[in-house]
Image (cartoon, rainbow over all chains, first blue to last red; front, top):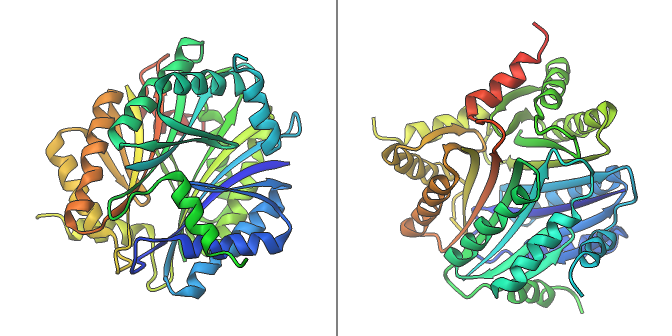
Length: 100
Length: 100
Length: 100
Length: 100
């Protein structure tokens, strides 16, 4: 079980807005069944590492199909094997340590 | 106005859990008055870039005070000047493009 | 053809030094035949994207075998399809634009 | 003493090539006197952390002056205080652990 953030950045696009590309990726994630959360700076996935990397590899293709011929994709893998790390558990662990 | 994500990773800690360090950083952000959101893989800030970088520089010191003598800090700056980019506006731009 | 940087960061390692883990990864890359360069902050690979991701997935396992039960791996993919991007070509493009 | 990598990515640049922007940044680093190395995926600096962050903040402005109105800048800080970490020392530590 891993938690993985990724950010797909198409380069050489005509406009500065990238939200159409992000929406396309998000739609593909909805169809994939993989647990995902959109944040202001990327998308966070949770699940078996190989499954998550396969999904990221797939959605990395999407901007190319829409026009751009250069895509930068940032991935940050948090792979913990001494306990089940989930997105919610990670957030809860921090909240538990904040003053009430 | 910029949106900046950062992740502080203390190295050479005795345990694999890092949530105590994250909680300490989060507490400092609460005190700072800077707009911030905790995500499963980092913290996202919003505001004038110089202010955000100053805050990150400050909280980068916190783990050192708690023991670890090596800290890796990842920063991702999204600085947009043709329109006011906020965390909420970025998320909304994507949502607006998803099928209803 | 893609250029991909990755950094493997074992967490909870007791000591701050990570060079033994990096050396183990580097040795595996030597055996893999994939083109690679060690930099002070990570390793840069060059080749077909799927091949590079498969190699990174493999070496991401190595620290777990050596003890740590949590590993963070950062990946930055630069995938360009309008021309053949190589490590050397990227560096040369910059050098060509510097004043002589 | 810290080792810091950064990558400046102008967005919405019309062309996929970014080397002109990187060359401009590189030229500014030459003028700054800060120790720096160009890698295929970014630039690595070495020195007192505050000095390095100030330089990165400065060069982050450069692409805006050349046209683009959105710039993403990635920063990875490796700040070690139990020993003097330099770029060369980090590479040498790995090399020392490779089989001869």
